[in-house]
Length: 388
Ligand code: PMH
Image 1 (cartoon, protein in one colour):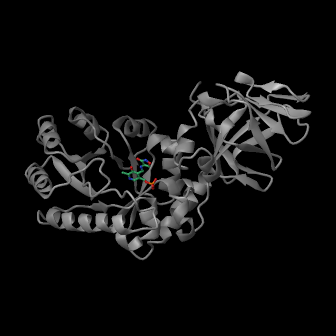
Image 2 (tube, protein in one colour):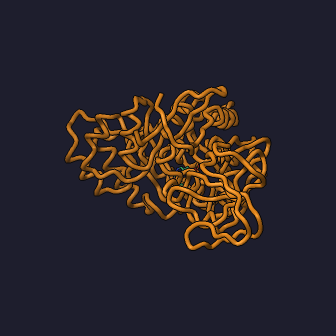
Image 3 (tube, rainbow, N blue to C red):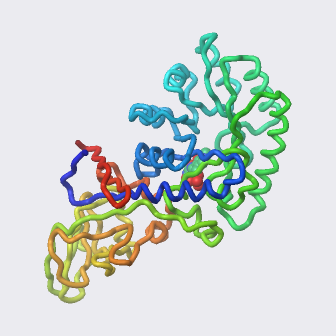
């Protein structure tokens, strides 16, 4: 087990990840469904290796990441499950993908041509064809381009067209007009693709929102990201989720200093906060270099200490910040920045709302300076400290 010596850490509840995956798959118990666990960005900041293992234990059959390095990191950690890279990988690296059995996303004829010049006759490169039905990011958009890619793929045996997919831009919104338009396009474009009669194993379009809200719209795979981590795809549809999600991520710290200040004393750079009376001020060893960005101090944020709320005061520094304590506390007392403390909770959604962003962003930006502790059955099963 790795060690760490600082008094700020993340706790990841792997049972929560497993439970969210199990519950999602249960929605599809009457038919074939593959769950692709989206573990890009280091598992949305939770830790890609540990999350992948938990998701696979609970029945996920595929993993996906954003770029090749993330896939290689999983292989290096001994993960054997199929992995799809959902972003562009330079055709120069196709041999690396084959060597490590990594599936690539394809959406350009040029790319296929470049790849073929680097493939040997007996190579098999697994690919998923990406269609841009309205996300406007990457993917094929025109019938003739889809057809020319299909011609090329079907006439070169080194390509194994294992999947076809698209990505929704608004599956997490109440208004379904745009979502329906994307579904309709995807269905129509799949018709073209079926003309080649290739045995395509996976067809996938759904993210968490579509996977949970519209089982009938998903083919035989969906890509489960945010909800696997126990976070709602958007506050707008929380009431529509078919089961309660269990948040896996908590962020904790311990007081590194406690002092009583009289009225009129300034706190932190710029002395922007001045005590309003005699106040107990606590210092926490977490700052913006840990991803606890400076905006927390202006945005009226709180932490929990013994289940009571304590506000941030003064500007967040690089490695430290200050809070106003409800009463005298001791150095070493635990403080919860995200998660539960004595039956009270600060959710990821609360933190995201305070910062005027989405819950996805919060765990992603808690930097790798902050060690992660992994729990299963209430026991610590591993610790990750990227510094040592
Ligand atoms: N599929 C693709 C192609 C994605 O980009 C994402 C998330 C998912 C599936 C999973 O979505 P979910 O987390 O809503 O379940 N991608 C991103 C993104 O690029 N920015 O925020 C989320």
